[in-house]
Length: 104
Length: 408
Image (tube, rainbow over all chains, first blue to last red; front, side, top):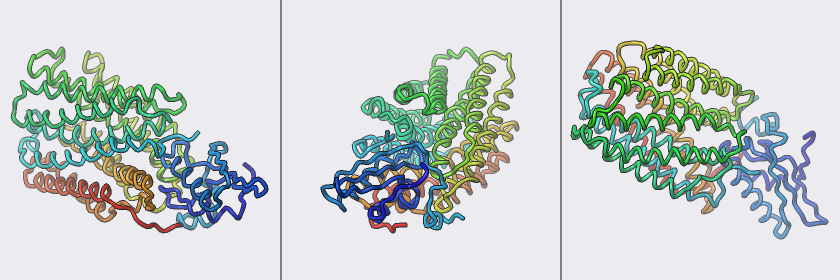
């Protein structure tokens, strides 16, 4: 994925969802590849990943994302796709995330 | 596709947590039995009470905990549910009945009757092994669960051997010398069941928990291949003296070194810097297992076994308190809790527990080497403190009510 398609309006809500093992929100951890709200169609589309395909917390994170968005925009259907291609790498962690994790 | 458990799969966590709780209880029981034992320090490992205490440790605590961890871990990695939750509960209750009666019969020195509880225990082991192997067989090949499958197979071999030993005590039916067979039984349990389980689970868990990148998986695969080859060599050397037993030790030692390279790579390339105390404890434990290898070349088998079992115990304790808080978190999530797994961990208590465990090892191993009852007694006391702290930490985590958590 060359660029991340992240709609600024969605980010505060998505930042409320944490990866339980890391304790960092999913946006700064780099798990969200695309977050788009189509106002005309009243539809939200999320493309995201987990740090590993075998992440035991994955289903819970996905549920949290869906619940948080549905609570913030009631009535807007949420289309959530979990992908593992491209795979998550630490390079996707944002500056804020790196500071939280204590890495250079 | 999303792999792993969903909110609807919480029923399995009750089974998994039951394994961890039973493990913690048997760890406490083991220290109580060990307190009354005076034979191990003098190298009398064939004493029935010593054997009872050893099995409370390796079966009651370590094996039960590993079984619970695999019941959680295998469905997550395979992306398939357990073959049968009902079968798993059935196996667990048989295992539990065997765990209670087997050391009890040994404590009563009724070695002629030990085959009866051994049969119950073995039935539980078989049901567990079938459960795991069928679940793994249903998973796609690329999931790489073959290391766990080999560990479970060696578990089955070890328990089969144990059952045959118990039958031998009544009917005298072993085709090979008792001590040779006993050595194979212990060796296979330690390297085939414990070490391969640690390798199989560790190859996934360490990089995942540490957010490691650039991990060298070939080192872990090589480790598993060498350990399996060593175990086959050990079996051949036991059945027919065409191969010296030391060949097995060389293979397994090589496998251990290869896994150590993998583990170091995971720690070196980790992105996670905080909350890694328990993983570091597990890493130290694995290092201690490696120390058992040179000690096993001496004439002090109990010291070598204590080193290996101590390392396995330290590793299992470290990983237990990574897994149990996560399972509790899953349950809290299902009722709307908002605390992270790390927030459930009683950190100070576990640090004291790790220190007590280290003290126990530092006393028990030299105590066994020089047959010092004083040093041995200090080690036994430290191990009892470890078990009590471990059970207390488990209780605190499982009774946690949840609560607020800060966001990043």
